[in-house]
Image (cartoon, rainbow, N blue to C red; front, side, top):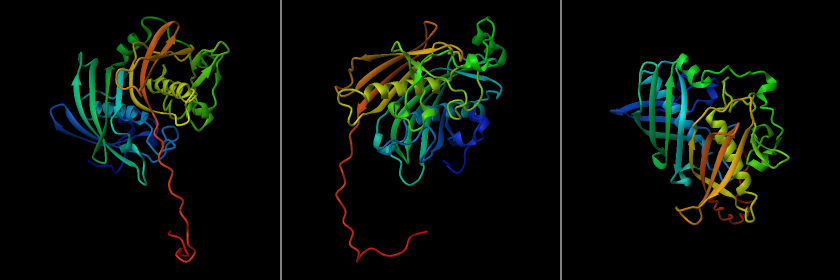
Length: 330
């Protein structure tokens, strides 16, 4: 497996080379592939947390890129086809393996490819299920289901026979009266990375910024899955880090996303959160967030959060002037 350079950005549906994480892929069996990816030590949006752990949402984006790359490079799906996701998930089994050190993380995905309701050449249905390892250490499982359709079929699915929605700048704001939350309240560093807003009535809204270079890497006609997932993650952070005992906070362990419908750019999207009973373990918090537009659920995100275990404070180190050298490494 090679980690020398990213694959062509066209083959993972990215406009910016810097947003391509896939580096290689080899077929190792019938419908089974090994896919290599490199995660950066830092990133504008998906950066490590205060304890140095890589952003869990990199898992979803890497699985998405893996599926798209395999579809085009190995499975014969034309570049012009549109990809429509229906569901995705991940589960982290070893958080320690995701800690970022002095070099980028080399990630390997053992991918099983499955054709689902496949009707080529106009419609291809596919699913990938991946076991994820970092530097040879298994740490997560993830999956994604997608339909790839030609342009004519996409237009029929997308607009359902209705007129195309307007895409002027006024419409793109979604006519949303929500106030954007400060970045620190949603676990982000930059103000423009907050996609969570709140109305005077107390509703949570997903805020759409088509100028965001990562979340809207290229133009589109609907809200991408990754934007909805980011909004759900930020709402989860806001709710769990502002509780009665939020000194250490929480870390995301698992995510399940179901997308039954497209989310338009020009209508407000409400995020409705509900705590769910946990059957896995008493310390697991399960949060279900429904993304609702025009009273229709366009996505459901179910997240499992674990209480963060803070590292033990290091012992105080005393430097002796007689043992410290003069000079610096270059």
